[in-house]
Length: 297
Image (cartoon, rainbow, N blue to C red; front, side, top):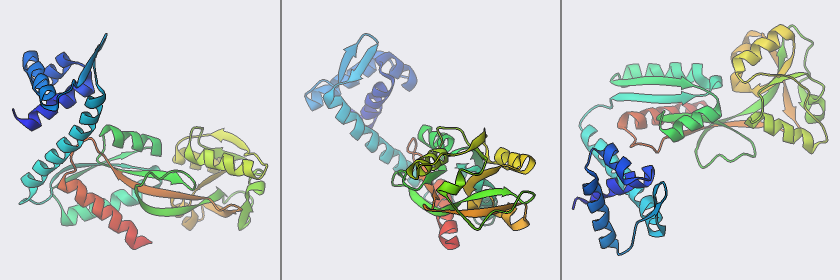
């Protein structure tokens, strides 16, 4: 029996919860699927599946086997990708999920590097909120994702690229902001901010509560570009990471105040999908991104 093939059959049944669906997905006859499972069960000396009204679920032994099988199959697939590409230049499509606040700078620099050093790589960018990028990564819809985290939240062991302080920003057409505001003073400013659930919104809410204050949210807007427009046109304020408004601060469109007591930070971390083997092209792009932010620290 081909051991890897048997593990693929076993894993597909676990994922789909059905012998017949696994047979269709793998292009095999169902009797062959059943025979392979029977041989696996004989080899381990225990049933791997339990029958339910809707199909099958892994037994207790099957759950352990499924976790190990997934790791082995991913490693085997990665080995084949590495061997096929060993003598070639990195090539192929790499999909990168980006946050709006870093998209322009990251996409431009990364594209220039690929054009000059790895022209056989085809870059594809997706831009979305941190929650969207996280979902794209977990579903395997992007190869690499940049996620936003806030101080006190779990960074999940990902590679942190940089941290940026949060600022209170307003239009330069409005009254000047002080150099520093604290959480008590923040309640005096009408804010345009993303609706809950949102990491920044939750961080600000908890920080305000810790000093017995509340946020003065007058408009909810999810997209950072929409927030910027409303701030400009309606003379409201917002709280954003410095990196999201560096261009506007430099050009004098916005002015800002640092937030202290407590200081609030946002981290941006890099993560890669576990849904398929990582190609050499994706690994090269990952290395370029990490090096870009390492140099800028």
